[in-house]
Length: 179
Image 1 (cartoon, helix red, strand yellow):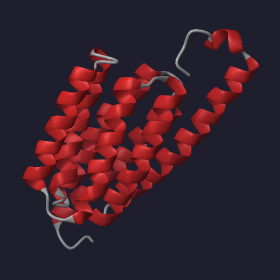
Image 2: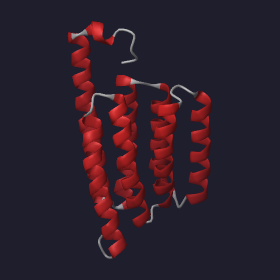
Image 3: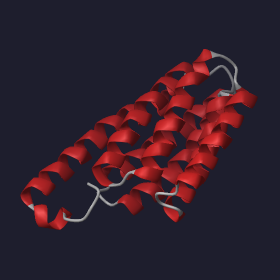
Image 4: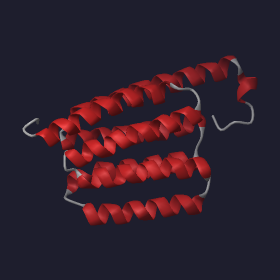
């Protein structure tokens, strides 16, 4: 796993992403969640590059663009379709084998969640995407990335529970929201 300096660098970037993901999914604010996810995905992209997982690296770079586009064009099916098309092209160009499939599934789930959903439904879809990314990290041999995604799944589930509890306790605060 650490047989070269590049493999070590990949693991270090995975650990940096771990810290950023915990902060992101602990947030109850959608905007803060998305900003922290951009930073975490820069670290994930570098991790995948150093571990030579090309499809995951390419799709992670597109995740960064997707987050920015979803913030600027929330609900835009046309922009979402463009992101999905770019992801398909990137996957075709970098495809090495079936080990790349979890990254493709994660990109699809995350894209739909970010463009079409908000609040709790968005977090559920991002949680499913995190499970797919977890498999991608495991297949790439990324220790930090695997831990990050496992903790993202757990932290995200806790945040969803907290939001559901708050929604039951203070329903008037959630009127008119997508949560």
